Structures are given as structure tokens and as C-alpha cells.
Length: 93
Image 1 (cartoon, rainbow, N blue to C red):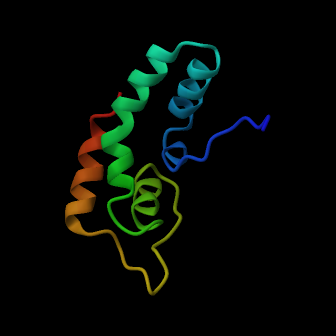
Image 2: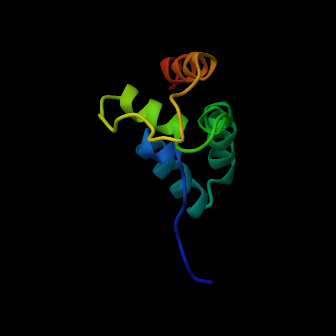
Image 3: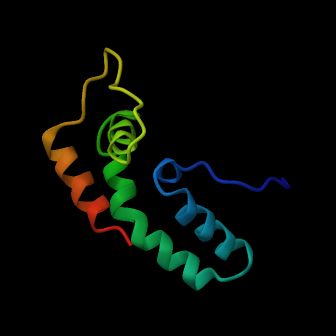
């Protein structure tokens, strides 16, 4: 339809990574784009492991942007979710 873009929760915490992934794809470097997408899958899955936006709010707060806690009826991210996101972000490229 002529549109270019991406909707990405991951881009809220790693915008440069997502930008490079999209540019690699658009410029025909599909092998690198695919490798980047596969690399990101565990973190993407963690960002959707609980009801949106609970995990991404936790991750955004973790990188230093105070976006507060989820409003009711949502609750904070579970301890298991926090551990998973902490581990994956700590070991990110």
C-alpha cells in the first residue's frame, strides 16, 4: 500500500537496534535483518509475557525514563517477569 514503517514495542527501549533492523531489511540485507530479528525474539517475548503495557513500562523505567507504574486495574510486573527482562537487557548487545 506504499507505507513504510514499523510498530515495535522493542523500539521503546532499543530504537537504534530496531531502526538498523528495518533499514537492513529495506536495503536488501535480509540475512542481517533476519539475524537481528531472531536475536531479539527472547526479549520481544519477555515484553509480551504479561498484559501490555506492564512489561514495557518496567523496561522503560529500567533504562532511566520515569514513566511510572501501570494504572489500575493493571498491576506491576511479576518478579519472574522482572528477572527475565533484567537478564535479557543486561546481556543485550
